[in-house]
Length: 208
Image (spheres, rainbow, N blue to C red):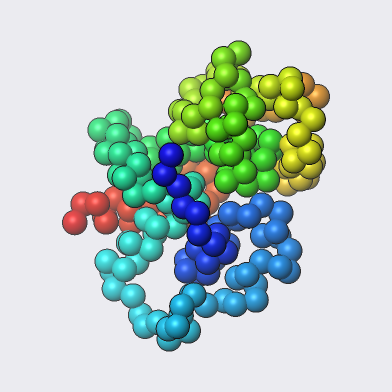
């Protein structure tokens, strides 16, 4: 399983905005981008004006980093989205939102997508009463995600649920806090995917 293992706060600084990769820490004064609002590296404070290619590249990198995906897998998602009906950029985001690790995060069972990915890999979730330990598993409308009975006492889950309930849950999913189950009601629309990204720039990047 290929994944990024470097410093997460460095990624946020490189993109110039919070990507919320470290959960609750991102909402505190300890967030690195709050203290150093410039790109990492020796020349981080002296970067010039980016080219059109550079802007497109940064948008692609931002989406990859938000969802914790590396280049090869991201390119596969893009190629699948380009063959499907609809606007390619929107279809791409809808696919990424329906990944099991992202849905677990959206349902509030984890404070970050990285944490959700780990929980899924360790087999803590059932999808339609079958254990699924593949973070990239794509959910379909009507699928039910449930925390495994023996995993309900994991300390991270109740705290994450409390924070999610305070922030509010997406309208395209529903969650039962008592039984620790969630349901994907429908595919989210672009307006409901509240991310500071311009997916059309990714389409332009791969269309060069």
